[in-house]
Length: 396
Image 1 (cartoon, rainbow, N blue to C red):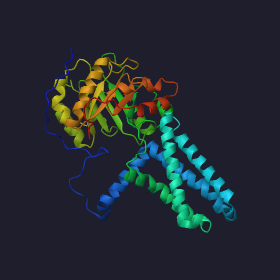
Image 2: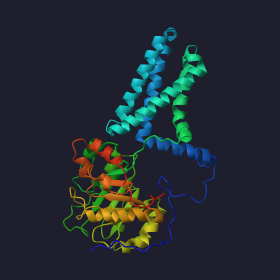
Image 3: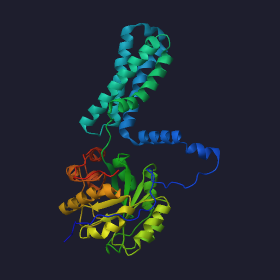
Image 4: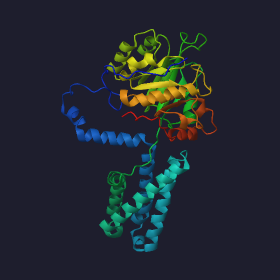
């Protein structure tokens, strides 16, 4: 019988990580480049660029707006005399808008229809505003198509931020962070998984199961981590260590792994292992599984970045049904996340049909995505799935 009650309280926190998962240095490296690299303005710019590059929605908007500018301006620039004809300008503007919407549709083709419609509305609104302002600034672009194009580009890139700040509107963003499970075994086809899901995920979740947890488990093959790095070089790699002796695996994988998920029933000293992970700039989490008393996890909650709830009974086996008891545990951890400042993960039994019932910003799925008829669409539906309320505040 699993008990879900827990006394509140907090333990001393280990050094906190920055948003990109790296530890902050106590001292700045000497030299002009180091100082410039840490200048507040440049740091803000770097964060903004990273945010755009990691957000498929923002990339879709930017790509669509650039297609609008390109298709509208090039005909007028190549044949300036045509710019005198109002119908040519109108035709060019209409074609450019269709090109932008087509670009957006290609980037977001696997996302839900209502999301694509909202993004299209953003594209049309920003493009129309940029066009109107550019026309006023350049007299329609007849005299200087190049100057008109420059204003269109600058306005197209800056107006979304202005609208967000002034009107409080937001470009639609995915509500979940999705990881697809890869097994660290010799017969796992990592390249085949990449072909199915591509970059329609936010991190890669590698499951490592050894004989201390499952005597019949397949032999661990750490070479799969190298395969993951080659297929997804820009994504964080998370290693779920399903072992009673996780330290030996952690110490052998520092170079390939960004995040570690550790079992609470470890025979190794978890506190010292977490401290070592922190020292090396890794994010770290603990895992709840069915049958484990939640109270025994309390001492770690303020020391971790993640708490992952296993939604299935048998570890390392895909295709199992979601457990109702694990949903109750996830609701409890979701309410505790704001107090202890960790992110909630959920792994096991996750699919498009039940995602809306599962708390937590981070989802991990294997067969729920890979066994579907269109894996990329299933991945996007999971990333856009709403996060249910559990009566507590979301973690900052």
